[in-house]
Amino acid sequence: MSARKVVQALIDKGLLTRLENGRLIRANASGDQRPLQIALVAPAFSSQVFLDMQYQLSEVVAEVGGTVRLVSFVQPSDPVIFEALEGGFDGLFVILPVGAPQLLLDRLAKHRERVVSVWADLSHLGVLSIVNGPARFVGKALDHLMALGHRRVDCFNTLPLEPIVNDRIRHWRMGLDQRGLDGELHNAPTKAFQCSITAAYHVFNEMIQRGLESKAYFCVTTDIARGVLRACHEKGIRVGKDISVCGFSEVNVAKLTVPSITAVETADARAYLKMGVDWIASRGNDWQRPLRLEPDDVGLFVGESTGPA
Image (cartoon, rainbow, N blue to C red; front, side, top):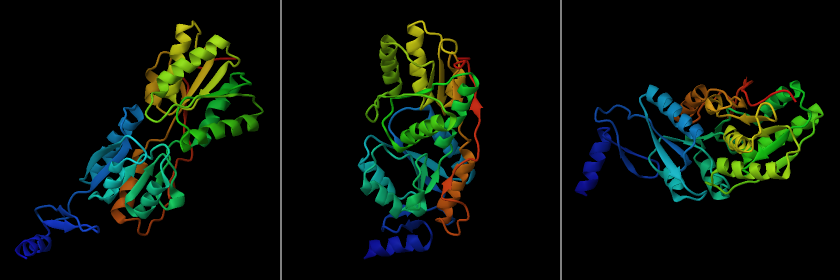
């Protein structure tokens, strides 16, 4: 009884806060509202895109006096994801795992007022979703290659067939039909957490040995294009002269690669991340924006990896 009275006294003074699940967390000693505590739930492997997202989110949350904690998972049903959802975080920015089970999707929907999905569109579940690189902009790469005289553009993928990848492949197919172009899909998906760049290198090497039938390739990510470039280099194929290669996203990497890689750009995520913080802080109340946040347009970085047919 004494312990309960002490706890209640600390709550009354604003030193402790009781969450909806009954858990107690420490508030600011001053009695003011505690800083915003945000989790970034992301796969446990290194990627420049993930690092950029973590850095940008940390900056955005720091502007409102909050902090970000990285929560890494290694499988779609990893308990750490569910623990983060049920824990003391004010909100979570979630990079959806490949093959996310229905149980996880249901749990995200249950906590929708404090969850923001990054890259994967979960707006149909009532979850605010940031899609700063919509797949429809694959057409930017196709238009560029078409202007260079290419009439066949193959698609190359070694990533697991998650919704984002499938969406880019679908828009590649639609883009070919709309422009009257030909093309073939070269699809060799890896398992989750396998290195898609290394896989791209090996698979494209095999394609070279069989004989390349196309002079232009759209890779679903710029990282995959890096694997293609290495395979071509070792076989004496001049990228940008003998064949043309395009990527999607990771433009900072595309600019530093030799040769630089033509890639579809993504919009700066900071503005959308700020909206995500607003969503979490307000618990989605009186939300006036769409649940799917995406740019009206993006650019195309034209690198050295593309040239005339």
